[in-house]
Image 1 (cartoon, rainbow, N blue to C red):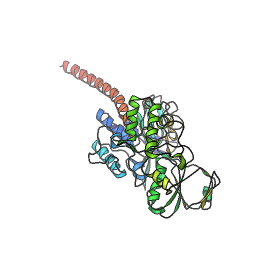
Image 2 (cartoon, helix red, strand yellow):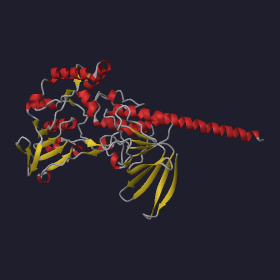
Image 3 (cartoon, rainbow, N blue to C red):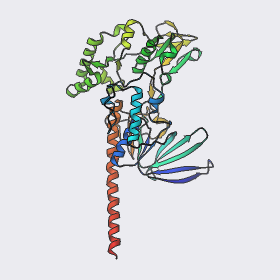
Image 4 (tube, rainbow, N blue to C red):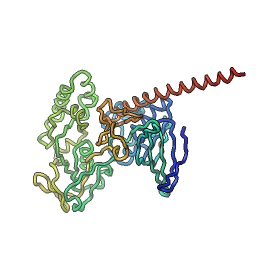
Length: 423
């Protein structure tokens, strides 16, 4: 239930609508926000979901390439309380995952307030409530709404904004430059010489897609990278890693994964892909850097379909100069340079979140802050990590909610009995 009233901001000379939310406000309607909302629904706690786009899961719907599939088996990617349909493949496609999220929102009656861009959120110590200011824009109107709530759940995730590095001379390049979030298919690059900047899962897969569309990709590899097969001995590599970590210390699990990888893929160093000195799972824990799960790009690298090149020194008209002095003629550039959290741009708080937009406490302690502040989807452990956060948050709020609701019912019953006794 929402309670609405109006406040007049005389400084700006317009009326601002304020809404008192009887329950938490969830910022973000991606998988993390949907999972939290579903778990709260299961606990009987009302909520409001704010989403800046006009749809749920806007990253998946608007900023992903056509050939994308989940990199992990569906058992590790389904959200709480509702599994994937049984007829879905082991690695669902982008469309299948979006369909699943749409049905998930419908099943749990999650109706986000779309086109609601959060400008700021701060805790008001005087009132003991969070104040969340938003701007809602359509083609013809623009309105400001402030939501006042006891609990604030940050579900904007790790990938809210594109990372676009600055390169010397890029403005003089003259060719097409796009970020991976704008890339849909290699069809429009057919026959073109394309420089892919970045060698993570996106960079590898975009290079593969370009190669499959008869483009000529060169992939920039500036630093060391772990490349593992997506599956080992009939099991997903992720599933095998989870199994190993149940019985072995992380350093030994890493050594076994790298041994198995070498047996399946062979040596990758001779192709310009140098492995880090730290193992893949330990590196993931320390820095959040995900190993590349190969789905065919490595074969293209070995055959020469994808050229591996070192870091960039500068761009010029139709060319790029590399740090080793080599010059390449290129037609287009695709920046597979990743994403980052945008939390510091709007959350006015410094105790729970760090400057990089992630909780200061590492997993599994980074889901709860002070004064009713929560975070979901910042574990660097994918959808399974987000689901874990969502369940913890809902149980934590649900416990308080049910306790207070029970007390209210007791007071109401006692008052009713006293009233009856007077007659």
